[in-house]
Every structure is written in C-alpha cells, then in structure tokens.
Length: 448
Image (cartoon, rainbow, N blue to C red):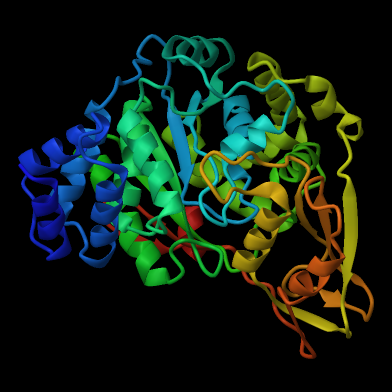
C-alpha cells in the first residue's frame, strides 16, 4: 500500500477499508508513515468526515495498539468520567473524591490540555510530587486500596492515540468528531471501567461551539460505547463562559479545595453534582440519578469528599500539606487586577478568549514539549448576571512566566461584555443523552 493513496482516498471522502486503516496506522507507529503524512491524513479527515464504520475501526485499532487494563480483581462497579474539554473545567478533580466517598470505584485515565482548554493531568501535577504516570499494576493497586485513581496514559495503554492526540493539538485538527470519539472511547474501553459518564461541552469555549455539533458527538460517543459494551451516558453543558472562577492549573486546584470544604462555586457545583448523580447511579449506590446527586451533596457537606481528595493526593505521592493549607504554595511572581470601565451587568464572559489568555500567561502549551507554569492563569471576580460598578475588579491575572502583566489588562477586559440591563443567569446543563436519545435536562433530572 502507498500512504499517499490512502491520504488521497481520505481527502476525496472515499471510505477506507479496515485493512487500509490498520496498515496506515501501524506504519505510522513503525515510523514508515511520517508525521507530515499523518498530519495530511488528519487534515483530510477534517474536511471529509470519517464514517461510523471507519470510526469504529480506528477506535479498535487504537485499543489494540496497546494493552487493556484488567480491573476485574477490584470488586464493585467501576465508573469513569470524561469531559470533552473546557475553560475552567475542573469537575474531574471534584468528581473522583466525591464519587469515591459515595462508595463507587473511579478509575480515571485523563489527558493534558488541548488548544485553549486545560488538562486534568496538568492540574494534578501542579500539586508537588503528584504522580500521574502509573503502571497498569499501580493503577489496579491504587484503585483497590483507595477506590479511586487519576492517571495518564501509560506507555502500554493506547500508545497510538497518545501520538495522534499530541499531533492533533499542534496541527489544528482537534475538532474532528470521529477522531475525538476514537480518542476518548479507546482510552475508556482500554481503561477497564464498567460504565462511563460524559460531559460534552458546547459554546464559545468548547471545541463543539454549536449545540447541534455537541449533540452529534454525544450520540457518536454513546454509540461507540455501546458497540464496545461500555454503557455510556452523559450531559451536554454550557461552555460560553468559564466554568467556575479559576482558569489555570494550581488556581483550579485551589477552587476544587474550596468547593470540597463547603465554599462552593454555584455553576461549577451544579454540573458536578449532576455528573456525580449519574456516576453514583451507574455505580449502583443510588436508585436514581437524583438520589445519587443528593448523596454527592451529603458527602461534601460532611467533609468526606475532602478527606478522599487528601487521600488521593497522598496515595499518588503528592504533598498533602499544600492541599490542607493552600497558603503554603509558592506565590506567583506577578499579579494584576483588571477593572470595569463602567457600571452595569455582565452579559458575557468569553471562555475561549479567557482560555487563550491563560495560555499566554503560562498556563498552557504552544508546542507538545512545552512546560506549563502552575501558578499562571485568570481568576474571575464577576460572572454572567453579576452587577459590577465602575472600577470594580472583573478578574485577576497571575503568572510566574510573564512578569509584566499590565499589557494584558486590555485583552482581559475585552473578554467581559458589560450592558446596562439586568442579565438573568441560566442553568449550565442543557440535556441528557444515552446511546438512543437526547432529552432536555430540566424536568428530566428528577425522572432519571
């Protein structure tokens, strides 16, 4: 076979046979298909969408490129969660200790930041000493010991996706829905969970900016999960403005700690409790999703979830002292406040621009090999619907990479739209989905 012929067929929208896909991807792993040829394949797939059969084949090829975790020795139902990526989305860091405190085992294989969105692994690694690169044996042991584990892809688990994942980030081909599905579901199937809950983001700060696109991906993911016998359900949620207040790795960890200690950010916990309800229900610790959400609120209120978070950090080598007392953490080298030019009501906070700004301050990557500044980012003081006075703080910028933050003030201020009319706050959850349907969340929540 010739790589250029496979690229040509992909460019022209002709369906590739499984054998062609297997040869092309295997050759890429063996370095006989080059990075630039795979980049051409990815770009062709952006403009000529992959079919469902091609998506299932690529997912299976990804899975078979490495080992599958065997978690059968860990008793109980194992439930994983994945988000398609957003700005300020730190729900995974909340869900793992909350759901584990409710008695459900959570094996979570996570990724790093893509584009303008943050990555769970980068947030975890902002905690000194926290180990995310675990062997399959360590993952199984940690899950069995503490009921939870948060790790990255090991060399042996879906190694092909790890290479493609990094290449998509630097070639602006992140938004290909079938490859998003193959990437997510290959890791989740190989990760050994018994069920999966998804959070599909849509809006300015999401990769799926339009609701219809998010719904298409939701059904695609759930369909792939069904094909591989992994029950998959989820929510479609709003990502027009950042979720919560903090955007940036350690800054988001601090917000997680605040929420687990009872100082809750309303929109962040709205999404978290709904996802937790789904996970606890799938884990057979609640008769309904609404009961699962109530259990989640209870373990936070009683401090059990925070205890689990400390246990998670300790179990994976992290410094618990900075978790138990966040003021012990090193301060950013530079901090600057951004204020409102006039009074009014916040009509919008552009999540994408905030995410890009945080990246410029050091919280994200331009190249795969770049390091991140754990202290860098943006913390919002105002969100949609809030009243703001002239010269009142809109947000604060933090960095130890960029020492002169004054030039970024104007960019940050432009992320906020201030109007003169009151702006009603809206819920963050649009709909629920499984492999068969998508239904509005609203009243559905109490019926699940």
